[in-house]
Length: 291
Image 1 (cartoon, one colour):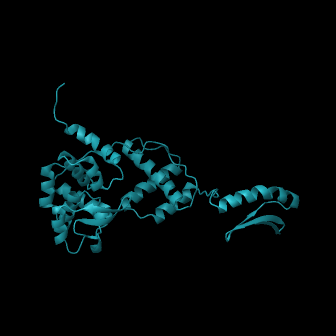
Image 2: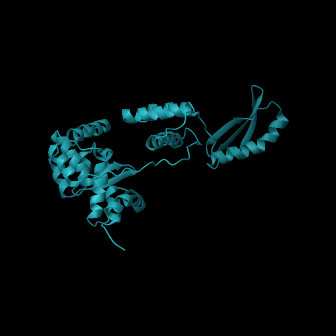
């Protein structure tokens, strides 16, 4: 199973199991020392071949972050935010004092470490153990704001895209480019945040998708920038595209739809996630009461 051999005056150990082989230098030219090192080295190599003790892989964050930025596709704006976060981190600069900026920087750094782990580039991450949530955004749209958008956003295909996003509660990334073969009678199969999921089509969403030809094929930057431009033109303040999804969930809950069903419609992995997102919003919706 294990054998010793000498190469260039250095002893090596070679271990083979089920067609897999690992050869490692014992870093000595003394045979007696090599024999003593053989037992421990053989044990670790066998454990590694069996998947019990993988050899640690490490890479400086400076190199890992370069790979991450070059291989992970993100919008130009997000790319620049991450690039700036990595630059500050490598320079040893303190994190931003603004809570939201601080949260973004921490998420960027930890995302890079997580990517390295997932790709097998590293086996140990040095993530920042801090609160990355920041202050949760609670913006939702009023009925008058929704009507203003649906009646005036241009051009028509993008207008229908905005309406479809609201009527389904879908994330932008799930519906920017829908394959026709994934459109079914009552749902659309999309690639969600946590994998493939089905987006329920209500009657309003069905009416929209039946008239859109061809289906949308937008990139992330277009949706974000176009939406911001249109809401500014309509004088709707502090508006983001993702707020449509939050408004969808809140309005369903206000109509009496169970939190469990809302979680399913939003594609949340657990009801707890939905409760965390909507508990602050529902608190301010409670009618006046006396004790």
